[in-house]
Image (cartoon, rainbow, N blue to C red; front, top):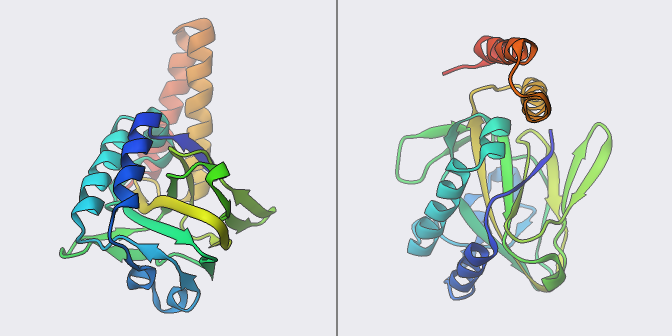
Length: 225
């Protein structure tokens, strides 16, 4: 499932960008796995950075309040958001995200069911930098407005094309979902959104209540807590 979600408003994006443009960046290879490290060429805020922690809290608070994100991801755990920058021809070649991530300076581990990229630069501010995801239907090319996030399966083969002008700022992180299987989450979000639309058109009635029961029975069957 590939899903776009608006997370941050204009003022929030502007405040984040101001902080990021003044931040001290490090080699992005520090969080890459063995294979990814050979194809990763970007900059990243250290996980110990005060800026990274403060902006990560902004992102997490926005996610907590976002109905579409919570309905689609069904989050059990969210990895503390990280921040990266691509410029001067930097890119990230083909890779698959590590299945398990350990939160820095803790023993907490997260299964990366869902990967997330939250764009913090407007598309017209840089050339290149598209996120390209390969699936059974071919490549999907993603370049979103600032404040918008794309969710995609953590198992996806993906890459970031070289940035040839400007700078591409983004936050990236992973979600361990209550429902591990992407196909099951896709069924649940489709049903959830259909129920919402029907309720808006018809109000609550017996059939909608019954459909809501089916949704929760499927969630009860598939969820792990």
